[in-house]
Image (tube, rainbow, N blue to C red; front, top):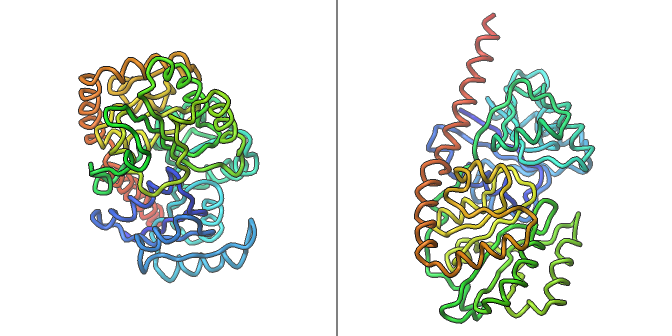
Length: 376
């Protein structure tokens, strides 16, 4: 089955991580993937390496670049594409325009929603009923769309959980504690996530002010870049930590490509988010048998069996988070139990094989429907 996979910008984020894992493993499921980026970006070389001869960069020069659309249409015809799968508004719009009249099923995965992104939301609203399948990454996210968006969710929607490629996340001899000069016997907390809208690193910073007063042998590493749209979120955390003399125990590591190395050297993973759709970083930590503490948002409850395999705190509540950090960090037996429990849980449910298998069923269904329509 020949599938064209389109992502506009190759930034370092959850959707792009998922796409890389998908491309690297799709061949084992009889999926022949052609990959197109319309912008390029930080992960360009990673995608080029994963896709090899199937990678095409079609650099659009404007929001609607007719020449880029025509190049994309030619590629679709020349490579005899059977399914087109896109992510978010821009890639979806280009796919729709390039494939007009070709009778090729269109699939789009929705990874997020922000009421402030009015232009993207208008495009998404236009595309939803024109795509053959719309995929959301959790039931919690689907309910949020029902509550907050004006999208027509009455048909063509499917829940397909994200998957992680375990081959790239192996427990290894980590160098992060040596790099940060963390003393032996100390507890290292880690959060992976850009400083962007929806993430809530400031609540962790506020919780750590309380934590350090009771246990100065705890350290925190934030992994993630500064958002171009909201740089003040990073500045707020830095300023708070500086004013409260927390920086001796807190590290801001920026964007890193060695996430498994950092996670392997950690003791507890923290996922502090006000709004999310799935939480790939959380699942990656669980694959490394790390005990996790997370905000109690609905998608996290959904993927952690309502908190049975993860300690949940009340979102945006620094006092509750501080209490959970102090309690778990001093209970090594509970940390070990949670780590093993979470690994067993995610291994059965969120491996990349389950994700690709679910997508393949949808692709086959759409091709069969299109075949039936053609016969009639």
